[in-house]
Image (cartoon, rainbow, N blue to C red; front, side, top):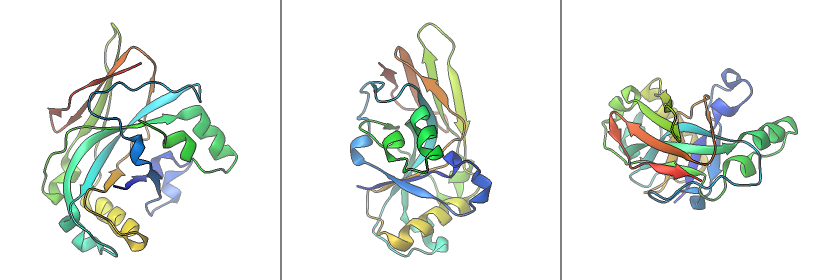
Length: 200
């Protein structure tokens, strides 16, 4: 399985990059069902960003955008934990971002649901983070239109063979929430709530 993350919202000026800019997330980055997220010690500040996980349903390369709908099997809400202070430093120094956004258990994916391709832009996915004893903070997001998802699939498959089970992280939120131990995370999509997990 390969995980491709569209990172345009993390760029300094996203509007200057009309085409999808992507990077890889290690498969070891997936936080397995219900396990807690342990805040790492290699940076001082970690943030949660909501994204839409799109699961590929069949093999394909050089996929034209008009055929992208044939390759999407299911979608799910996801949360990507980024080392925000390290990411800022790497950007300023012009270095690769990998160490700030791809590390063990940095990505939690909720329950996948089946949606017709043209209904995916209308779906709302969200993360909620509740500090112990405090009110939950929420980030909600959605994809603007199906053409964006089709363009992401076309761009990535131009140079890479998409395989069954591969995941695309699209619609990554530019907004984020700082995470610390003793918080609880929930993931929702179109009202469906996935099992939550703790931050430690």
